Image (cartoon, rainbow, N blue to C red; front, side):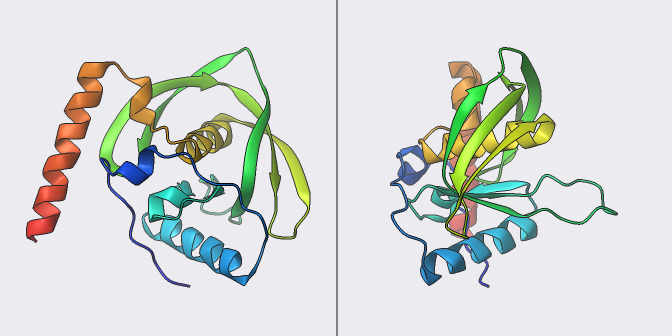
Length: 173
C-alpha cells in the first residue's frame, strides 16, 4: 500500500466527470488499497479516485466513528444512487481536497446505492446518517462536483481563495 497525494482545490481534475471502470484487475485492487490507506491516514471518512488524480468511478469510505467498533472499509466501483428520500438532513461537511474548510450542506437523509464490488458482484445497500452524507459527497466527486458547489457564490469564492493561498504556501515550503 502506498499513501497517495490528495489534490487540493482548485485543480481542474476535481471538476471532471470520471470514466466508468470497465474491469476489476490487480491495478484497481491496488488503487483501492492505496485509497483506503490514504483516507485513514488523512484522516477522513471517504475518498474518491479523482482526489488522488485517478479519473475513474471508484470511491472508498468508512464512517465507523466508534473506536471500539471494528472498521468497515468499503470500496464502491461505478456507484449510482438508485433511490433518495424526500426527507433531507443537513450536515457540516468538509473535504480532504479542501482542508480545514467546513460548511452545512443539505442532502437527502437516506439513499439507496448500487455498485460493483472488488468481488466483481453487484451490491446494493441503503445508507442513512453520516454514511448517506458521505456516499453522496463522494459520488459528487465522481461527477466533478464539490461540496462548496452547494454554497452561495460569496462563500464559495472565499473558500477557493483560501485554497489558492494554501497551495501557494505549500509550493514555497
